[in-house]
Structures are given as C-alpha cells and as structure tokens.
Length: 276
Image 1: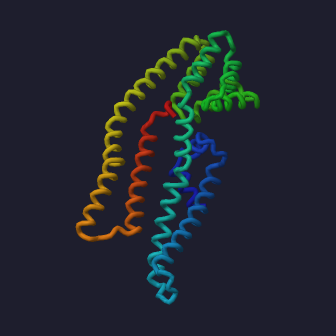
Image 2 (image 1 turned 90 degrees about the vertical axis):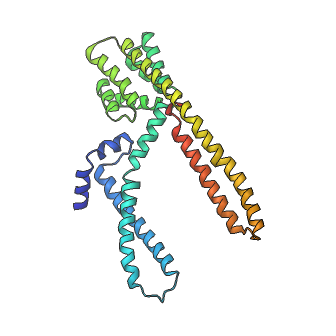
Image 3 (image 1 turned 135 degrees about the horizontal axis):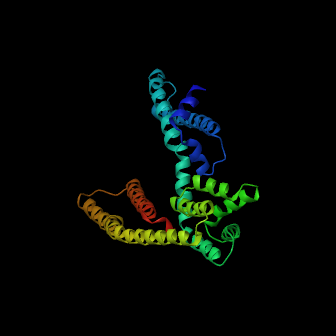
C-alpha cells in the first residue's frame, strides 16, 4: 500500500507513541483503520455540506457542486486524519502523563519507605502497586510483566522506555542503575524525590503567579462585561426603539457560554498535573 508506506516513513515514532498511549495495535493496522474512518467521515461531511449548498433544491445544476465537493473531501480528509485520528495517541499520552504525575511523588516516597524498611525491590514494587493512587497502576504494569516471566531489569527498562512521564522514567532509571551497578538505591532515589519535590514547589508558585492575572481577565470578560454589557444593550436598544428578539437573546447566550467554557478549559490547562 503506497500511502501506508509513505505514512510509516514520515512517522517513525508512531510505534512508540502507540505503546506509550497503551494502544494495543500495530502501526500498520492503526494507520489503515484511521484512513478508512477519515475517508468515511470526510464523505459524510461533504454530503452534508453539499445539501446545505443546494438548499435541498434537486433541480439545480449539480456540475458546479462537483468542483466544490472534491476540495471539501480532500481538505476534510486531511484535517480529520492528521489533526484528529493521528493526533489521538499524543492526546492520550498527555492525559496519562497528567494522571501519572498527579500523585507520583506519594507513590515514589512510599516505595522509598518500603525499601528503607528492608523490603526487597520486588516486594516494594508490589506494595506500591496495591496503593489506591492513580500512579499505582503504572507500577502494577511492571509487576504484571514480572509475573509473566519478564526479568525485573527488563520490565523496568520497558516501562521506562514507554513512560508518558519524564519524572516516572527518572524514578525507574534510578532503580535500574542501582540494580545494574549495585549502588545505594535509597540514597539515589531520595535525591531524585527531593529534586521532584522542589520542582513541584516551583510549579505551584508559578501557577499562583499565572492565576492572578487570568482571574482578573475572567472577572472582567466573564462576569462584569456580560452583565454590564447586556444592561447597556437593552438600554441602548430602548432609545432607538428596537426590540430584542428571542434569536438575538439566544445568540448572546451562546457567546456567553463559549466564553465561560473557554475560561474553564484554560484554567484546567493552566493547573499543574500534581494538582489534578
């Protein structure tokens, strides 16, 4: 398949992205499926757009519509395939990263506590995997690989290679280096966790600095401007003797909803992963 071969060459990291996103599909199957789905959706969009253009009048000449339909199919196919389907693994990776880093420090410190109390690394990993935290399931994947016969070092290497979080990969790297060199794992892991703690403090301080101006803009654009603006519009229309129809009211309500949703999504994106 020519198209598939070209996409594979232009996306050398697709296999790693799929494994990091925990998508259990081969790159060829994943790309082939997305090509079909994107083509179907682009055809549906083109048909709907064509119906809107001709306004349901079947007596109109369809020849000009054909010249418009081809670009719509190509553009919609490109946008759906590249920007939606092929970008889905990256979105999943970002979601997994935020989930993992939300309480990784707690799980990692619990792991360090277990090893400082004399537990072997494998037993400590099993105890961490049984925690009721979001990051515990990523330790559980390591334990599951070990139960299936994978050596401890290889299981850690695999999880480190396909980890969605650099912080988690750094913790696993310290464990892997200690197993390989025989160095003091407690000391190296504690140093790594202290560094992660400092990074979290810095991230929270930066979030506080960013939150103040954004909150001010929200108070102005999201609360004061809609209330005062709507009152001024009503008064102004009263002077010019114009009535506010229900359609105009729905339009302003739609704009207000869009502004509120924008700020909600912006605040959510601004918040550090450790505060989720």
